[in-house]
Image (cartoon, rainbow, N blue to C red; front, top):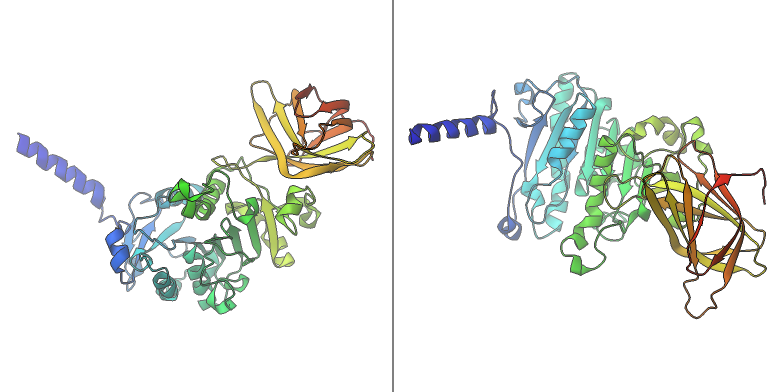
Length: 453
């Protein structure tokens, strides 16, 4: 009896691994020993569709269509990972596949080049990137022979995978539909010519996000639109010192993937981005004008940016900025804050705002620089809240000088106006407030008067 039960369990396990109509492919799982001794390049292509969303089918380069799930006329998205120093599979692969298939009926092909990306010597995977590109290029040519359209191909490349995507696109003279580059690798690619890295000519549309440009990522623009999340370097919630362990090295870099995943699944919490000369100007609320995008407004980050494709192509290369929370949902709610003071002398201060709804509250501290307040002069600030409120019933306002040696002066407000940037809610105002250093002042906002400075 025990023997028969064991046989039955083994058969069920076999079916789960193999699938009902063939073997399920598995992403290559290596270990630290492989990283130390190095690995020889081998590219495995794993196909996922809505018919086999949890069971990847291994595609044969010599005969791609031996797998009936691969439909050449269906749009195809390739996911191309980057450097894998420890040899482990990317933890986000399964979610990536699932979310893409939830959004559209696609061929999703995971390009597994872990054997070739795993090495303690970063230069080895870098040298393998053109080889991976040639492998995938040959596969796409076979798809073309079966009437697959280049314009329906989307290459999503992470780190080194971004440049692999660029090499593939260049091989087709930029006729590939879209390349999405998630924090393209910087080391060994910075200051190289365009034929040795990703550039806008590699696809009909190239969108790029930068999250670690001061370390593992690429600093300069590489696409038709380049998103600099939180300025493009230090990401909220990531370790700031080596005491944070491995996260100190990879958290900022990997955040690009999780931001993009959030853009696929979270269609109600859009991360709107703003064209600007610098991140500092963005934080100073100097870049909230979206007129150049006409009726479409400023572009959102991520999967749905194709809604702005035509306008972005006209603008050629556009750098945009946005900020995020440290966790899902990543989108922030922005308010333009305008303050006019009574004080005769110019004052500098940091401002904290807290909004209260019926059962919610959210806070924003504007502390990237001390704001300057001059008498009868409107000072504009950007307040970023971790969530939006449908109705603001009460506001907390606090200021501090940030300088322990300065006298703790008072800030006399003639007017404060809070205008939500990403919604149709009306501006809120309050008049004639006296603020004392580091003390909370509460007020109920009222409709703004037609009154300007």
